[in-house]
Length: 112
Length: 114
Image 1 (cartoon, rainbow over the protein chains, first blue to last red):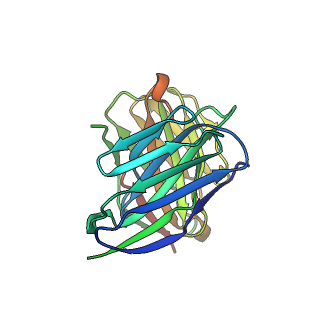
Image 2: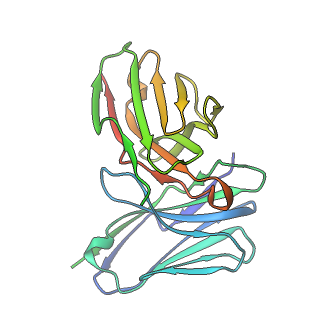
């Protein structure tokens, strides 16, 4: 099946730093989504992207749908301790209605 | 806000028991999903439903069945629980139309099978 490569697997940063993570695929995706999951909770949708080249912000978070449609990036500016969690990318492959493919996640730790 | 609720946050069952996991959403969403989440394996789709009484197999349906008798409720059934079904189970729903890929998740049920 489809696979998403999400990197980095984990990050340890200082409060106030900017963060960047990305997902790549070997095939074209029609939709990219970014989720955050806190320990013991379900993932929460952060940003949804629908067009190649699209750049969308949600507060301090900015995500982009890559021009090739095979990648997406999430940036977090001026990180704060509550940004700690696992960030997942997810995408809808072409020809795959309803089904999403998920990345393995990026574990973010923010040192106050 | 979309609210997806799951019947239990934690569940402990014995091998061979029949287990029911319930999921309810309050936003009149057409589509509902069941995933399991395991360390190192990420989220894997078990079953999904795009309408009442409709269901489709996901990537790992073996050992599971589902029921969708009402639009707001999607149940996952483990016919005979086994230890390898110990996992975090996540339910999600998504709206019809343009945003059908925007899946909203419940808080999860952590199931332990002894």
